[in-house]
Length: 149
Image (cartoon, rainbow, N blue to C red; front, side):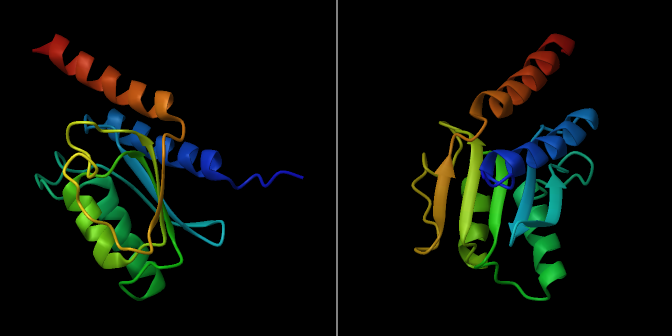
């Protein structure tokens, strides 16, 4: 029998967080952190709400997961995030030593791969999970923002 707790399942949970961000007028990026098929952190962008350029979904999720686990290292965890991490979030991921990163849409202009930002050598990366759904939500957000201005 197929495992119901797969990358697509957890990316859908991250998309739920992105929808919450969208509803708040934030860039709709969501993240969840998972250990042993259990979500231990849920987060979404809060840069506008907190007036903080570092309040990306991943950063919020890292803090929540570390708090939950009682330690700063996330080696046995997987980060699911709807957009490829930027270089700041990839740098933070490096320091958490996160075991795996799974992202939805690629960010060809601002993603960590574009800037050749290094992840921890043991971090496994999978990209493109529900890529269209993740990317379309972000595109919709920016089209609406442009049409309002």
